[in-house]
Image (tube, rainbow, N blue to C red; front, side, top):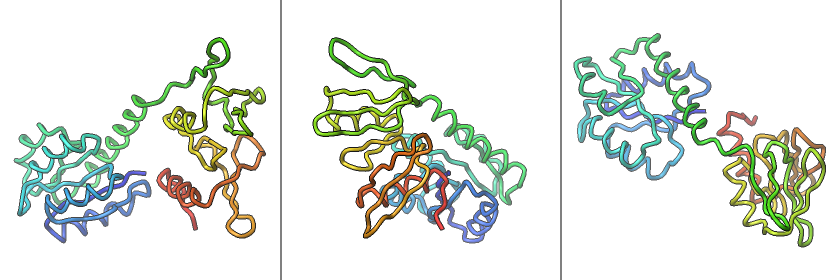
Length: 246
């Protein structure tokens, strides 16, 4: 899912763009503003914006000025320039946008631009992908473990258990706080004080009794407790990954 912000001082242009975007289930417009300053203020409150549709000629600051600010303060945000004047393109490309589209929007050109947005995001994820193996310290050295082999991590009394394809592995060198930091880059979340699970393997969420929750994973039948405080967080994360709750 790509979360977008529209920055354009022309109401008709914003409505036209939103109409086009309704055809994309994997793009959600989080907000629309009419000037650069409003865009800057909004970005301070919403860290989830991935893409900005950016008009160039606006009152109170041009799109080029905002693009320069973005490149310094929000270098991970992608943006597409939109303008009614194609002659701006030559100056605009030095800001390295995903694309430069003229108004009114050409459907084919727009589709190509959106395709490049997702290609850019995929490349970023590929470059930032965490190693597939991790070295866990044990008595006398380290054991190398494949991340994909770990079903979940559980603390029982004073010992840490890694439930894996080959059974349980026991470690006592780490606290759950330490393991939470170590495994967060690999997509694990602490759903309960004594449990860490990989987000992508969450299959279902259940409510049992009075606000008592648990989850099931797609690689093990074990029930994993889910704390009330993490229930909303898990649903929000899954929503960002494209899961819709009805």
